[in-house]
Image (cartoon, rainbow, N blue to C red):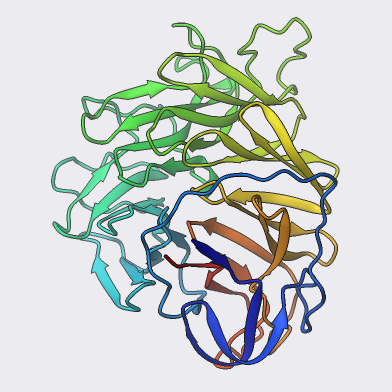
Length: 411
């Protein structure tokens, strides 16, 4: 049974199992320095199901990670990865232990931005413009490569190549964190890749497509297509289910042969079943974005007008107002998002139909600005970017990354 941190104890920062010693306060949605009653924030409610986690509580439910490098969290919420100058820093949320790995041949002071780490903590996924040496493949140079790194062997692999190790693009490209996703076991990685429309005529423009790669076999599957043809268009923000079967993405390609499709400005949110080849249009708002649960059956959708809908198995469970930028936990139980009334972060329990504040304690210092954002979410824990200083040891008023355990699993 899981127990959400509906009550939190806030004062000193001696923390463990999601509890902070001091005065007890209720969950809130204000995001400021005081607690207020819980805000339901929704227009309709419907329960959902949760998977049971085998993890124990984090040794520290709120960890300041600083701003030295970008961060990622494993799907199971056990590992946090931070990219530093020529190094990767790994944090085990259950034991509290840190470890670092040096990237062979990395350029000094280069930024190696993590986009993920597998559930066993052994394989990291990083994006960079700088490159580093890998033993099994030559670095093709160029810009914006996607790599994996194995903590046990210290070796890496270039991922944005085909099964034979050949480049898949004729143009240097840059990956955002939203352009890459992966399965918790590391078998599949999905990414968006930019290329020119015509290699013989670079002035013809660009196109961006979604690919799924089997890291064990090297096989690459093009996702945003219904035929053997190479449709020209722009696709982005892929999310993959944990078995690699479903991929959620946005695209302006007319994948359903819709006669009302208006061309390059007509963007839709699609989910493709790579086992059957079928494609579902989840939402047709031009700027809709979404995040996919691990089983591929629950989707958190930004539908515009500062509203987020929760889609499950073909039906909308609820629509939440004053909400943006949703990120769903891999178990499909929680959705983190911005509360546009104050621009703080909050998390929604689908089963309880209830909002809770992130990180649900008062800040020590407001900081130079008030903006916050959930960077990545795993089961039970997430990574927060914030200008607020939530730890007594964090007093600089600058933006920092934090690990926050939003749910402490108990049996």
